[in-house]
Length: 101
Image (cartoon, rainbow, N blue to C red; front, side, top):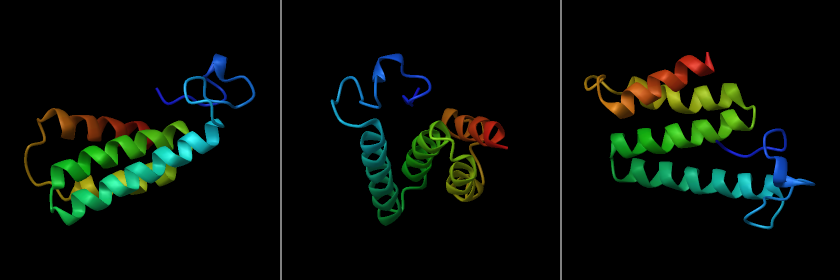
């Protein structure tokens, strides 16, 4: 689970307990890393790695309450698949998309 001010009892005044930085700053930095991961996967033309990065980034956005953004980020990647829907990655994406509906 991604810590937020609402679900992180030890966050105190919005400080991430293990990083010692404001929670919003830590979440913003995490988002930047997921954007770079998505970019890398696209440049490598690795749809599976793009899906994995999109799932993680969408989970981060969902934890921030940015539901529409999370769905808009994950849906186009998921829709590019034509097979393998029984795999763990695609089942996870489908489950997350249902949760974001």
